[in-house]
Amino acid sequence: MFRNQYDNDASTWSPQGRIFQVEYASEAVKQGSAVVGLRSKDNVVLVAAKRSPNELASYQKKIIRIDDHMGIAVAGLTSDARVLSNYLRTESIRSKMVYGRALPVGRAVNAIGDKAQTNTQDYGRRPYGVGLLVIGQDETGPHLYEFSPSGIVSEYHAYSIGARSQSARTYLERHFESFEGLSLNELIAQGLRALRDTLQQGKQLDTLNTSIGFVGKDSKMTILDGEATQAYLDLLDEEDSGAMDTE
Image (tube, rainbow, N blue to C red):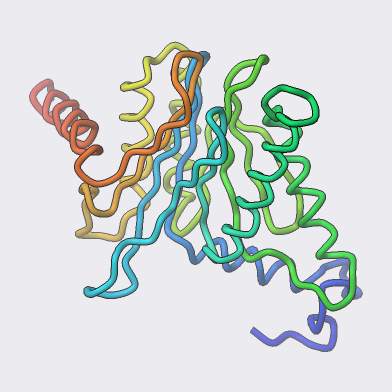
């Protein structure tokens, strides 16, 4: 994807007002497997499709716990995600030690946004090649944020990033107004339904490639993998069977 002399580093603008290194980092996010986030008035959920590099390897971790009230889902370079997650954990511990309270979710996301923006301004650095969906519960309620390699952060009712994520976003745009009053199980089922739209033809969600994370007013940050996801996958199948019977 070589462009010209304007893509050699992240601190050079092109005549069209573009920073190509940031655009290349955003392409890395689009190559990662999809993650979906959505929230109701009491809970916020992440669902992710995991990938295995080959038949002999384990599936890569997609959802990372930061603290009891916060977690992230990643799309892109997992190694860059580890750097940012460790930074968030450090900031969360510092907030508890200095202020005696959990780090507010909005402040945490702005902190990694500022950290990423520095890499687009200083010569010799590169943008982080990873996108994050950050969920959390604080005194103002549940939150869902998206972090991009440019350092821009945005809050959403529902969102998806990663490969073929546009299909999930289309589903979320059609149904997000109904999410507000859903229970936790119903919210997870909606997330799985959106995530399923991102899969390649012939692929299905199963206990090996599905990861679920949630936090809410009555629950700490919880991550479900493997057989722990089966109950929610069964719930999704039951709802689909009921819809077919109705038709």
